[in-house]
Image (cartoon, rainbow, N blue to C red):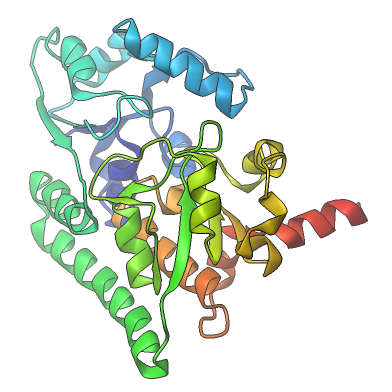
Length: 314
């Protein structure tokens, strides 16, 4: 079976489950390990441009309003691969190519592949998606074992909170800086397992624009900034937008030095294993006195105040 994945989260899960030998054809946003080994079929019209958060949001909004897309399928490459199955997504047509756009190219092929849209809303949906991927690739047992191990990791995180009678903290996780977006879909569920609650979040629903005044009134104990598609260094380039906000220095999270910059892949990329990594990292950010992480996970986030101190020393 020849499989193409035009959803980075699915590509990650295929690799996590050891099924990558069947994978032929990916998107430019897929994990580096896949980009080094597989043919890129879905490409990006803005590739190579260094844009700020506001500029990206404006371009995407304008393109969407005009009925266009910033992603495209390299049809000759797709035809040369001739996949039997393509995984697509319809969670967000801003961040990734959607099923409709893929279908327009897939239906031109001499042999039309099966298209499976992976469209999770909740964390449980993500685990179900892993099972769907494995089953579609005729490896259902591998998917069952994969999900079971991940759920055991979550149980271990919750057991620590239960053993120490840890009280939840008020959290705010920001999915985009300019304009400001709250977190949605499965991220509030991640926060809950990690011992927090985000009262400005939208569980199992789309993230939405929120006002700075609402954030100031909420005054979170812990602030986590993880813009979609951004790593730690890229997020720091846009931090001035927040720093210039009124009452920034009066937020509890700032005063208590509990502001964190985190890698987006642990939150807005809906692969089951990376989301569980995210829960473990969230627990360490929210309750650092109770959780110790592996070296691999420690580099996935950083305390904002420590980053500032490092830059000052440089």
